[in-house]
Image (cartoon, rainbow, N blue to C red):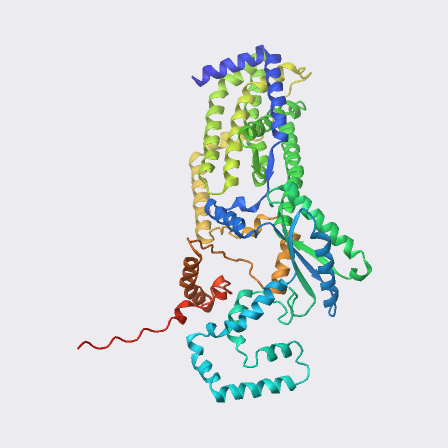
Length: 560
């Protein structure tokens, strides 16, 4: 049945070439607007499994923590006041922009005032069972007298600075029980403990967190947000007071714009390089300059039509999917090369150009269809993958491969018939295949033995040195990514973790959420003590543990 189908397609292509070319021209005109409106998705969250991506989206919807940019402002030692002045000036420039939701370079004063008041009022509730003996001794007359004497000695010492007010308002130093819990909220971050600002301990770096209003997967919004931040920063750094500052940026907005820029650049380089390389190879092999047109054009046309057909049903395409375009060019060329090789061989046997094309399409069409179907099935298997970008890649590749097979049997013969025939026909290069076939037929056992030895050797290499799979999501970004480098610099200066974990706990009421958090806390604390986790930050740190506040029930009197 496939032979009859391709016989009919070959006859149609060579008998009515203008009609076939016109039909594809109309299809191209219809596909181009769809391709031009196709939106490229560059959000790294769409490379994650669906359940993890949903958790991130839920986390962002509840707390608004995904659409962020971080600025690392650095100066030489002694420039602490310059850093804070720059932070205040940038805050003033950006705070009224419709693209910016908030700017933070320190703890909000309101939060500090509340914590200052509550930390003293609720400090005794943060006393752990292990600290009860010390707490009891502190509240005895002797303990109070000793603590007051210690406080007076500290106040009389020179250079206590900000501690004076703290000692005056808390002479018994009850706050230390609460501060020990509140300090855990910093996790592994190292900020200057004497300042409410996000300063490094040595005072040479300031961390600024900028939250935007546009989502990071909105590429136009991400680009506009990055441009606004960079313009404001460059304008301030041009002023005499801030010329010595170095400003670097990272965060979701910068990763999105960098990914889009790198992917676009790679597409501009990789696809033309692939086409030029393949064109040079097939021109040398087939000994015909015209193959640069009729050999590559069907494959490129199939890619454009495939993108248009994809865009008709999916208006958004993950940008990582475009990484397969260069591979699709190589795969799609196979169908055209089979038809061309067979047609040129038939011409050498004396058939006319028209008849050789009909034979080539009819005789190779069934094999081409089977090859296309097997390739399409393999790519469609990506639809079962958990990563969304693999879904797009599988669908686009499958559609393009099917169109490449169809165009090699219809568009390619019609194009060849419409072009002027070459003045001199030269046979394609054999590429050493006749010699190889002769040697294989003469020494089949030797060839089979060598093939078996090579296979066993490859299997042994895999067993001794198994491949290691890359599991670091940071490596999906461009090599030597400046945005990723800034993120690593921030972690080195302020602490933090390169591999943070997030647990999103949801329940019906706040009380139930807190109960869930308290049940998790012992396990997480044990993981910190075992070295599996660097630190844990949780809202449970802000609340005294209810289990330690419940007084024990009196023992029941004995019966009788």
